[in-house]
Amino acid sequence: MKGLLSHKVKSSELAPGDHIYAYRSGYAYSHHGIFVGENTVIHYVRKDEGSSSSTIISGLISRFSSSTTLAASEKSFQSTCSKHPDCGRPGNGVALFCLDCFLRDKKLRRYKYGVTPEEFKAKLRGGTCTIAKSDPPEDVIRRARYLLKMGFGNYNLSDHNCEDFALYCKTGLLIPNKEAFGTSGQINSVQAALSSVGDHSSVIEYTRTYNETRYSKDIGVRKDAVEVPVEDVASFLNRREGHNLEYPKKKNHDHCERE
Ligand SMILES: [Zn+2]
Image (cartoon, rainbow, N blue to C red):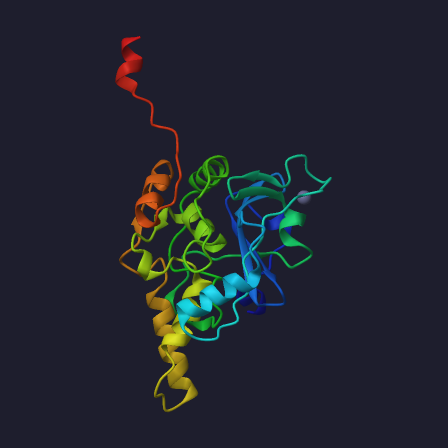
């Protein structure tokens, strides 16, 4: 039961297309990515190395209007790694790392898909599992590799972060409304915790409200998630929040036939 709840796995047990994560700064937050085989991970990192973590934390605090302590996001990374020739290769904020550089000596954990509502609610910490089912691994890897090349827009801790990236690769789902927050279980659990504060007669009642709110925000439960083909992610993000992404135009096959 303990292993079931902790999500720890050995690297030998990983399969390409798995969504993995590791905690940072103790258990303050977790960093997420997609394992794509050959000991490598594709993940979404901040490009703006210069901006300080306090800016991001205060930005989040003002958005939540409360003093949450969710830590800063992953910064981009200049790899000096000798373990894999491609490790650290930047790709428009999306990067490919070897597993060791991704983990930074922290325990490897695997995100769970298709869990039951009971299992979901039994976990008090957000960002470890979802009700949503994973698409087949070849689809997951294709999305991750496409975004590695083409980018995933501007990092935003509250609704466009490393967990949103991994969830998108696994499910193809994004949230169209910027005001509704993203898909990240970490962020939604903080939001649920804050919105559940009120007149509760007991801790049990508070926990129940928290869990119901968190559950209702899960990407596999909420009704506002839409499927977005990876080639359309740029136009989707540009429309949603003024990202300035450009993906290649689709080939016109009518034209090909005539040649
Ligand atoms: Zn490395």
